[in-house]
Length: 452
Image (tube, rainbow, N blue to C red; front, top):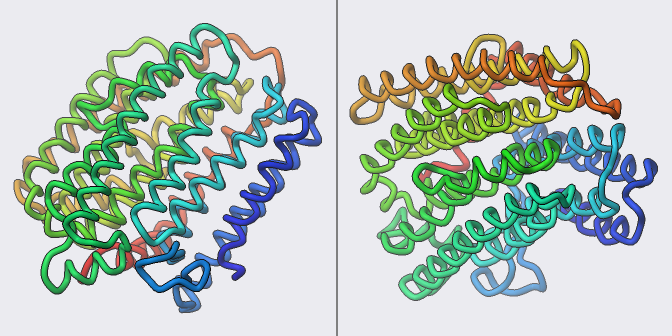
């Protein structure tokens, strides 16, 4: 049961911290310590499964039969997503704890986000995935208004409306899947996919639309620039570096296994959507004036990279998508937090984070881009997709220069925040140095996603 510790720790500690005043440094640092422990357990378990051959963990709560009760399933991909999100959340919490926590509920809300995300990553059926990701999304509604100024509330309102629409679409999609298949357990749906047919195309389309809205994929991206431009940098880092990953996880976990048939049939459309998002997001990122807007449109381009890898399919596409998730989470969070850093830490973290998002050397973003090229070459219309990726890289390089120039000229913040942005920037460089073992691990992880 140690496998479930990241989920249990987050769930048990969040209500306790909610009773305390999170503006007190001791409370904020307690939340940070818990998140570091959660990330450490995720990484240790991931290591055991990848390098020591430990088997995935599966159980059904309450002793119910599979297909009837709440099935918890923890494999390498679950732990990978959990570790990435917990690491980013810990960095954000440290950033605020050292600076100025503006709400007494902030540390507890971050832990509720961790609980909801781990629940979504660790569940084995569609309905409970929906329940857990709604926990994290509802928590994010409170986080979106963090700061409680007029601008934060306006951005929060747009975000709430968009996510309620996405949640409604996902719930209707679940109803269609249950009506046509009679079960919601992902292992059963995946087995049927291998034997006869998986998720019905209509249900798959509704689930894809809902998850695309959560990802901020063009043309369902309207909430992204509004929220990122108006939210506090710490909140934007949580949204772009952790919460958005629930959409990525759902897309990969459902679409590459239980709904593989529907994904393959819509492969050309998915590639086109991914390519359009890359060009649109990268082009507008290169033309924006403020750092937050640049990151927002770069995030839309990254959603395009993810969907393009998803549309390409196979283990190459899955590996590219996982690297896009890893690089985007760390590097976008570094970019947002750099705006509230000081001196050399600000300049360096802003530059490294932006270079990573553009997919340039010495960052995980470059590894993701290389794997994306490999998946694109093997997909239909390979030369055209490679051209789109190169075009997006050129636009994002221009956006990188604009972002770095604007951030280093911003006035220094009043409070001295923890240099969490610099730690995140150093992380992406360190992972790039460890390219060989990282790529090997990611390709092993892709086997847990692809139906064979």
